[in-house]
Length: 142
Image (spheres, one colour):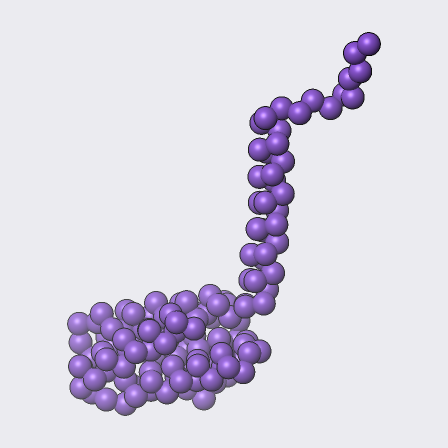
């Protein structure tokens, strides 16, 4: 007598099943991480602009991109926000610092704000560029 359960296990089925379970688990982990760190895109954008500042050809370019970096970090309600400069994070939230709930991370971001301001406070190209490089490094190693 031949008994057939109606369920045929094919090698391709097992691979698809495991892939689906793994993919679903990974998607849930990524989405929960994204919800826990809404400010991450603002920090990444600020880091990009700090990098652009460090690559600028003159001190004016360094200052411009450091302003963009600050605007992303402090947001439109922050003391260091410059409404005369672009806010590349305008649609991402209220700023990386105000959107952040982690006190340690806030301190690190505030340190980046201080360093960015030191670059804005000098008209020396090399000093401003060095400050921008430091800010970029601070933001990328969050």
